[in-house]
Image 1 (cartoon, rainbow, N blue to C red):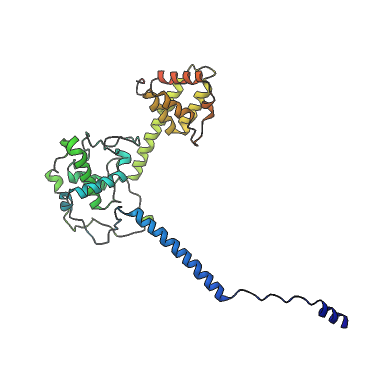
Image 2 (image 1 turned 30 degrees about the vertical axis):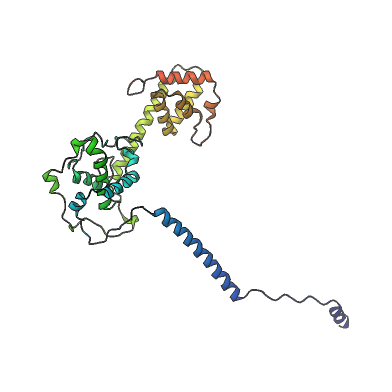
Length: 318
């Protein structure tokens, strides 16, 4: 026993370090973390506020609210309203009708209405209420209803289109609403003008959505099939050097319909440089397409000549 005692006295173990954790330290650390989170959130919130300046407010209708004063909104076509309508048109309508109201940038079928020359097809005509009713209810398979916009915002779009384009470029369709159409304008406060706030996931899909999607799909499939048929006819009689390129064209027309459409448009315009850019520098992943980029200039030229000489389904290339 004395030996152990002597050993402990001569070679004593180092005392254990005291535990450094303490509830107060954890509390302080937690508070610091909360302050960092709150500061970051506030900074991001301020950035969001700056970006949102000038954006239209989202107004959710309350249960029990009725129709707004449509006649008052119809009469208010001042510059401030027109300016607001221009912004809303750019965000909601330009992708289909074009920035100038007379193009089809998304290549939609059926073609969206040209505000500068086309008549209105809906039963209410092209007067203010007729135009507003199309924005509210949609039309056919191509025009959706824009009930995501408040009535005042829809009227702003109506005023912008009528003032900017229709009164100067399409005056025949800017007439006032006919008496029977004007009689359809609901009185202020009438029921049906608003809906209660609901979870968007509980809202049934509008019936218009299905024919609209079907119309888009049918148009896209038709365009893809036409490009594939055109490429197949252009490949008839191609030699061994051209065959792999036409085989690749057939694949991209089937799997990359947008690329096939761009190629078709470039050939129709006689724009060889654009067609080569579509063939060589696009592969759907942002890199060069090796099938075309490694082909000889003579082979590329031969493919170009065949594509130019082959008529589309709708007629010869001009």
